Length: 120
Image: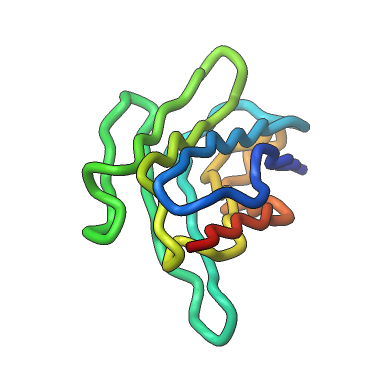
């Protein structure tokens, strides 16, 4: 199994910045894409950003230019630097990765989520 643990969320004022981290652990043979998703109250979970094992990135239009995703493959960790935060960025942020385990199982794994609250 693969476990993901997020950290770095919390309250922040509009215009501020936060950095989220997510570390993967467990029976990991290799990790493909890693990413961040978010879910605001009453809304569906949506993609924020993804990054491939080779460093290719993809962002939602709503965060492009403000958020930066990166990863440390040696540490099986993905980061999300969030700048110029807006109240509409308020949500629970979830880490996701697609990974192979040592048993040869390929799956999609989720963290427990970390709350980000942006006040105006």
